[in-house]
Each structure stands twice: as structure tokens, then as C-alpha cells.
Length: 143
Image (cartoon, rainbow, N blue to C red; front, side, top):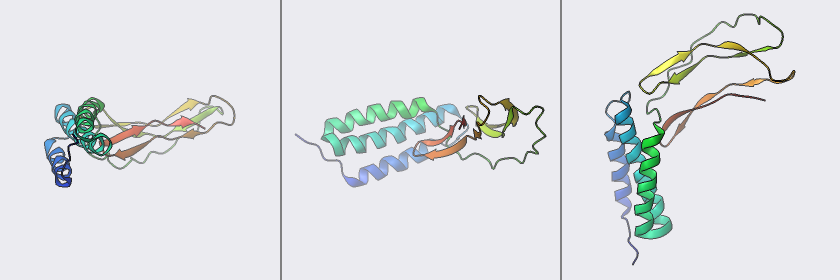
């Protein structure tokens, strides 16, 4: 027997997930909000793919992933201006400062010089990405 989930229930799940996190700086509330968003998304996708059983399984998996990930639910502040000092040595590259989420709030990490792994390498800065679960930092890397 296949179960059908009314289209409106997905919207209600999404709305309840948005109201679950009243304090985005509280990790417990972020986890609860993430769990609701994950559960709602998982249930909707599971229902499409596998009916009632798929919806239940999708809700369980999505809720667990959403609660564990601890995404930041508020966007990061605008980057700070940093005057880049001259490099102390030729083999160093500047890594710009960025906002880091510490579980409660955004904290500024100052830019600094690091040694390049090989002569022609360049630093590709990290950046914040908005995902359905919230904001997540994608680390910079050498290119």
C-alpha cells in the first residue's frame, strides 16, 4: 500500500522548521531547526521516491543529518577590510581573513601569510555558501 503525502504538508513542515530556531546563536535550537528542516526535506524526497516507507526513512535520516551538521542559520557579516602587509619572504602567500562560526557566533579570523606548497601555487580563498540547512564555510585551497 502506498501512502500519499499532501503537497501542503511539505509547506507546513518547512514553515515549522523556520520557526523552530528562535535564537540562531543557541546551538541546541540550531540543531532542532536543522533536524526539522532535514526531516521535512527527507520526508518529501522519500515520499516521492518510495511512498510512505520512503517518507519515514527520509525523515529519520534527514533529521539526523540536519541535527548533527550544526549549520549557521544566520548569514555571516560582511568581510572586514584588511590592509595586506608586504610579504616577509618571497615564498609566502596571503590568506585573507574570514568570519568563522564557533557554534554560538561569528568570530573574525585575521588574514596571515603561509608558505606555498610549490613555486607557482596560488591560494584560492574559502567562502560561505548558503545551503537549504543554513550557512556553511567551504575551506580555501591551493590551486
